[in-house]
Amino acid sequence: MSLFSSLLSSRSTLQTFQKGLSVAQNNVANVNTPGYVKQRLPLQAAQFDPERGIAGGVNSGPVESGRNDFLDRSIRGHQQNTGYYEQKSSLLTAIENQFDVTGQGGLNTTLNQFFQAFSSLSVSPNDPVQRNKVISSAQDLVAGFRSLTGRLDEIAGNVDQQLDQNVKQINELAGQLAKMNAAVVAGGSNDPALDASINATLEQLSNLAPVNVLQQQDGSYTVLLAGRVPLVTGAHTQSIQVESNVAGSAPGNTGAPSSVRVHSQEGVDVTQALTGGQLGALVEVRNTTLAGLRGDGNQQGSINQLAESIARRVNTLLSAGQTTDTPPQAGVPLFTYDPSQPAAIVRTLAVNPALTPDRIATANPGPPAVSNGIALQLAGLAQSTDPADQINGATYQNFFGNVIAGVGRESAAASSNQNLEKSMLSQAETLRQDTSGVNLDEEALYMLQFQRAYQATSQFIRALDDVTQQTLAIIR
Image 1 (spheres, helix red, strand yellow):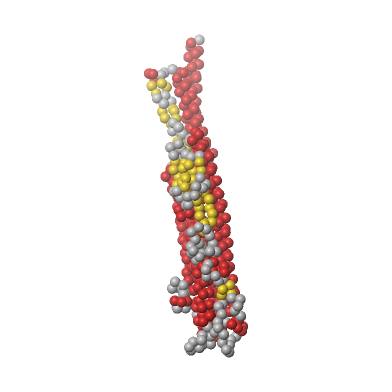
Image 2 (image 1 turned 90 degrees about the vertical axis):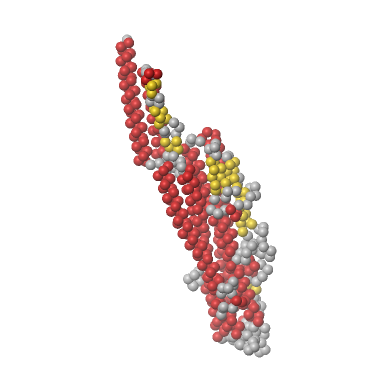
C-alpha cells in the first residue's frame, strides 16, 4: 500500500466527514421549517486490502430522509378532521347564538308574548287596549320570524364568502404543488427543502379539503379531491368551483334560498363526497344545517314550518269565530302569507291589513256560544294537545325548543370532536417529531462526531505528510 493511495483515501474520508457536517448543519438550520424532516448521511467502510494497495477509509451513501409516510398520512388525516370540526364548530356556534334561550328576547320570547296577548284578551274580550295588543304582538311575531331568518341569511352569506375563499386557496395550493412536482421530476427528488415544501403544502390542503395523496414512482404526488377529482397530477391541475345550486328544486318551492354545489372544471360534482376539511364543513352547514332551518329548493325549513303552522291555525280559528258586536260579524284572518312558496313563508308573512282591532273574532258561535271561546283557544295554542294545534306531534313551543336543542347538540358535538381531533393531531405531530424531526441535542452529537473524525483524519494526513517528507529527504 503506497503513501499516495493512503493520501487519496484520507482525502476521500475528509470529504465524507465534511459532507456529514453539512447535513447536520442543514438540519439545525431548518429545525423550524414547516414540513422539514431530519436528513442522515449513511457511512460505509471502504474496502481495505493492503496487499492490493487498497487503503480503505470511509465512504458515504446517498443522503437519507427521515420522512415516515405512515406518520405523514396520519397527520394529514387528523388535519382533515381538525379542519372540518374547527370550521363546523365555529359556524354552528354562530347559528346557535341566534336563538335566545334566556327568555329575555328572541323569537321564543316573542311567541310567548303573542299567545299571552290572546290570554289577556280572553279575560277582557271587549277591551280595545287588549285588542290592540293582539295586533301589536302579531306584528312583533312577524318581525321576530323575519329577524331570525334574516340573521340566518347573513350567516349563509358569510358561509358563501368563506366557500369562495376556501376554493380559491385550494386551487392556489394545487398550482403550487404542481410546480413543485415539476421540480421533483426535473431532478429535485433529493432536495430536502423541496420535500419540506411539498409536505407542508399537502398538510395545508388536507386541512382545507378531503384529499387522497399518492406518491408516484417519479417522486411526484397525485392529489385526489374526495377520491374523485384529480386535483393535481404531476405538473397539471384541475381547478374546482363553487356555485349556487338552483337545479333539482322541488316543484312549487320557488323563492327558496339556494343550496351550493362544488364541481371540477370538467363538471364532476363532488358536493356529496365532501366529508372532511374546512370545505366539507362549509358545504354541510350551508346545505344541511342552514337549509334545515330556513329551507331550500328541496325542503321547507323548520322556521318556515313553524311560521306557517301558527299562522294557518290562528287564521282558521279566527275565521271560524265572530265578533261580540250586535249583530256579530264574521272573523277575519290575522296573517297573510303565500302558501304556494313553503320555503319562503317567513318572507311573505305579514299581519292582515284588513284586520282592525274591532274585527278580532273572540267569540265562539257554538253552540253554545262563548264570548271569549276563540280567544281561549288561541291563548292555549302554545301547549295544546290537540293534533290540529301541533307539528308532527309536538306543541309549537316544544317544536321550536327541539329546533334550538338540535342546533345546540350539533354544536356541542362539533366542539367535542374538535377538541378530540386537536389532541390526536398534537399526539401524531409529537410522534413524528420524535421519529423524524430535528433534535438539536442529537444534531450537536452528530456534528461533534464528524468534527472529531475530521480532526483525526487531518492528523493522519499530517503524519503521512511527515513520512512523505522524510522519505523524500532520504532519497535526496
